[in-house]
Image (cartoon, rainbow, N blue to C red; front, top):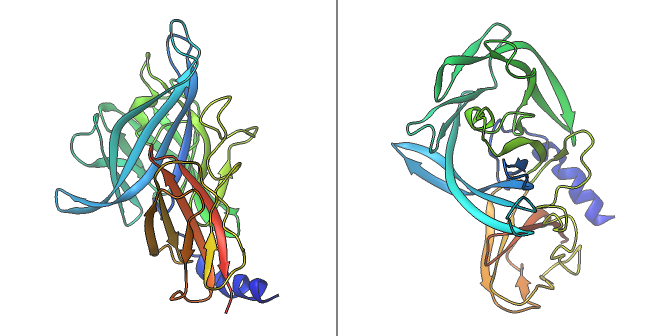
Length: 291
């Protein structure tokens, strides 16, 4: 009952929406190449940085795929980082395609507004309509958008925090004839979790389970008070703990398979746990500290 009381007390804080890239943000997109290799792209918030005078976020990008002509059954490739920031509902991106920060999303746009697609000056994204969606108790604005000139791509849905349904974070990379980017499969952060319609597997690829959903590093006891224990695979791991506002309150590195995480100095409440292995793969769990 005490744990339930903490959860109820924290609901107003959790329900506060942040337009883009909140703590724990992670996207999974489809991967499909010209050699018939299939898999996923995993994009994950890696931390804050400053670029060109802008406080920004660094997104790590991994492609996990295989099975195509002449390809291994499974391979993992780290791709170039993305750098992004949001200002007044406008999301800016700096990447291999956009060498300077340029607009990729505009959450505060109204019907009739449009913005150019970075890398293709003749094409733009136009807003057809706006509405909202309630997801995990959080109200998110969504825009119905269309690539102009019309007829090249289907009408898309752009949502706060989540981004596009069919276009990639950087839309131009979804438009390449020999591109490797498909639609969004899943999104999650410290407060919400979303899977596209018809998607039940958010794994790296067919035989690899999604970090944080299955075989996760679950804290025990939960709820707890002064500490919790993890059951990890052999090798180095980084353990990070965030409070309900998304602030990191603890981080420790360990090579133990059953490390004890001490929480004596923490306030009672709901926490989000992220455990990363040496390859950067993350598992997510929630932990409640009682008084």
